[in-house]
Length: 252
Length: 282
Ligand SMILES: Nc1ncnc2c1ncn2[C@@H]1O[C@H](COP(=O)(O)OP(=O)(O)OP(=O)(O)O)[C@@H](O)[C@H]1O
Ligand SMILES: [Mg+2]
Image (cartoon, rainbow over the protein chains, first blue to last red):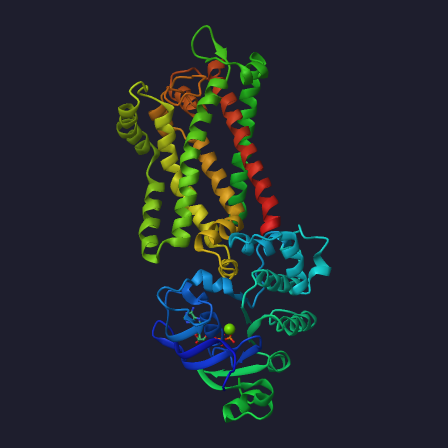
């Protein structure tokens, strides 16, 4: 698929854990200010691929990769690339909500604080929480522990703390899979709202979700990129048999 | 059944200890007022004129506890942070067993080590230091309890979920920032527990302290002087030829009761701190 305004360009990417090849020779681009969904059966390498995009796999000893991932014109795995800087600009929301065991307020301010944010913290907290559609629920209890929130609220707090960093890209690994349907709906609404200001890459198991929230969809199967295209086209007229089998629920 | 019995043994032992301590100290406090015991500044129970002020022993104990804590707590915590967050599996597999060996060395050996190695070193730098001195004892007790602090803190830090660390990294934090602001605070209750255990251990430590710090009840906070701790006093009297039943003999129960109360107080305080923070952190 040709992408007019790519923010991430991936060429011939292989990802290994030790000797095992988890992602095989993927090449694709992520469109700026759009939502890209990565779908595929369990174990096909979705999380592996996603976590490679902001160097979150660096902490796994057996992890190694080749190929290039260009972000803003620079290879993020180049020898002189700074992984901390990359993660600052490419944020991540995880499958299980993982707020810090600190107050709601501090959950938001911590990232900007360690990164030398100079502006007004109260404003930032309010804006970020509003951005994550959580402000009204927590504005009177900002100093309470983040762990006192419900799972859905915790996940929106994690999104709020991520957008407080003003990242250029937000990676989300099944952000709603641990949530109940109502919280899931709220997170989906939120993604629809965030797409105006951010580039989002979302991994999901749930094909309806991918169809609802994304502009482009990438189908991954056993580490191989099978099909990548506009979501609507991919779900209505898949080009590959494997894609069709997967989205019609014949396997996976 | 056997399990219940085992539990009963420890309960019974505790009760028996309390009963004996209570009975014998009761006899003691009929002759010496609690006030005189707790606030008297002179401890000379074995020689005339006798005096029963426990403060010198308390001060001696305090010197050792504070001194060894100052050594073991920061070093132990830093060792744990290094082991859990920075060291490779290989380094870890070398350092961990060494620490276990260190923790298993008999305390007498530590005492001799202090006397024959640490004290001469101190006297090289500070020639006025007495042969028996609190500093040497503090250092050696600090070394003794260090593996325990390091090992327990390491367990506490490693039990912090990986997802929490990842949350930190995903916000553009450096490993140091994640350790300092995320991992260590999340392990806080376990870390405090290890400090308390270490301090209790220093508090009750006897053998190494007797060997290194001497047996001179001394109301001082100067670590270069010889002192005596509460436990060291108890051993001195128990091993000596003090006749059972006399007031001299009863002193050790009074001192023992004080030890018991302070240790209990520390454990209660520790539990309180841990519960307080557990609410926040789990
Ligand atoms: N830390 C790791 N070490 C070794 N192998 C791993 C590691 N993480 C994942 N793998 C392997 O890499 C492959 C891809 O895993 P990955 O977690 O990326 O799949 P996924 O598509 O996200 O699956 P799911 O939908 O279940 O989350 C799997 O075979 C998995 O066993
Ligand atoms: Mg996954």
